[in-house]
Amino acid sequence: MEIQIRNSIRFLLNDKLIERTAVSATETLLDFLRLERKLRGTKEGCAEGDCGACTVLVGRLFNGRLKYESVNACIRFVGSLDSCHVVTVDALAGKDGTLHPVQRAMVDTHASQCGFCTPGFVMSLYGLWMQDPHPSIEAIEKALQGNLCRCTGYAAIIRAAESISAVGDAKKDPLVAERARVTEQLLALRDGKRASIGEGKQQLILPANVDDFANVLEVNPGATIVAGSTDVGLWVTKFMREIGPVVFLSHLDELREVREDGDALVLGAGVTYTEAYPVIVRHFPQLKELWNRIGGEQVRNMGTVGGNVANGSPIGDTPPALIALGATVELRKGKVRRSVPIATYFIEYGKQDRAPGEFVEAIRIPHLNPDDLYAVYKISKRLDEDISSVCGAFRVGLNSQGRVERAVIAFGGMAGTPKRASAVEQTLIGAVWDEGAIDKAIAAFASDFTPLTDWRASADYRMLTAKNLLRRFYLETGGEKHVRLNRYDVAFG
Ligand SMILES: Cc1cc2nc3c(=O)[nH]c(=O)nc-3n(C[C@H](O)[C@H](O)[C@H](O)COP(=O)(O)OP(=O)(O)OC[C@H]3O[C@@H](n4cnc5c(N)ncnc54)[C@H](O)[C@@H]3O)c2cc1C
Ligand code: FES
Ligand code: FES
Image 1 (tube, protein in one colour):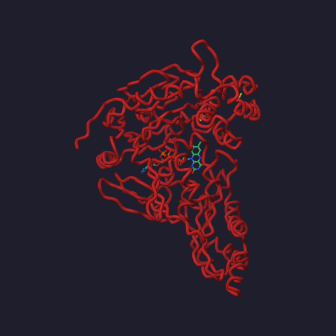
Image 2 (cartoon, rainbow, N blue to C red; image 1 turned 90 degrees about the horizontal axis):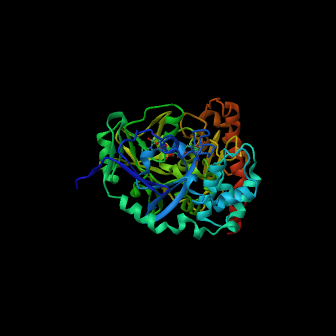
């Protein structure tokens, strides 16, 4: 079927329809709001997704359902907003100036001093309130991980979050009350066409569907693929890189599906961390802490597992966890698909097993053998919103004699790519799972890794941490208990 092309991007901004025929590939939502629309309630703090001062809500239809999420406007590209509803802090107060319940709660609990961070907090709390009007402390802290305040401190802000449900009823909120109307408006904007604006390095393309995405990439093999833009956004705002032509994928529902496929869980390449969370935690509860410590809420609402893998950073958090689980990267070029074990996908620093014009279509994660011991540990300078210094993932299967039958151990932050600890694994295989085996395996780390010193951690720190994580895994997963249990079974079974 021939694809029709539209030369504009259309979205709702608060209560206005925006249609733009001229958008640069690198124009951020924050610049658009502040410079073109003069909506200056949304602030610029860091311009790299870290501080949350630029938080806005973006509503998007998925399977006919409209959902609003907090995002960082500073690293979100305007081009990615087609058929979305952007809600900024400027739209919260009533026309007569009456504060929105979220703003009222911030005032009543004295949760603002200089006020610079306040619009961002308000929008994060607004997003939380719509999803969960009576949030637990855990939910509040999670929703605010991506917002920094330098003067008020967080206690008053958390009090505001706790008191919002008493200040107003979410059902009366305009975004809730007008959901049906906004849904209709957004549905009308979805015309099934490819959007294409500009030419050459300035071109941006939103393919009509995943087949069109494959075609567009074959024709433009040098184009930059943009999923959640939580890596690519910084190439623009921090490194001033030209990234055009750009091909967006976050609007493609086909790439946002999570499905069960026999003995595996399949995450489409456009599935965000937030979307993947419930199913990841159900299958792999050991990943709950790691998942909750990737970026902040806004980054998890935008960022994708596919982007984390495709980016190939040696300190990306999901690759070690996925290597240990034996995941595969499902690649596609045109109509041709292939599957690559994720452990071999990372060739060297900055180089992955992906040809020009090829893209990651999905990540396939086999279910964990229920008897396998599995854990992932992220070590970073800050607990929240920080990149790993070292991230270690461990999966070990024991036989009935308590000997190691299977061992897959992978690290981030220890080499130029996420990397398996092959010598450590070989030392463990066949050994009785006890302190002696751990000591021998620890001695093998030097054969696997020569880590670097950088501003996150020294080489010595990284090496010692990696070794200690193996011991921690052994102790936290029951230590010699397994050997004793298994021997007991053998003796008396
Ligand atoms: C404040 C902040 C905190 C962060 N914290 C963490 C953290 O704790 N842990 C962590 O691991 N990362 C972290 N990141 C990095 C980033 O969020 C992740 O790497 C994220 O998974 C990237 O996904 P994305 O969809 O945003 O990718 P994008 O930025 O859109 O793309 C990243 C790269 O992947 C390519 N790409 C994307 N999708 C595909 C595809 N389908 N096929 C082929 N290539 C593709 C792009 O071309 C680009 O090279 C953080 C980033 C920020 C801004
Ligand atoms: S300005 Fe700091 S997160 Fe956007
Ligand atoms: S009130 Fe000043 S930074 Fe938060």
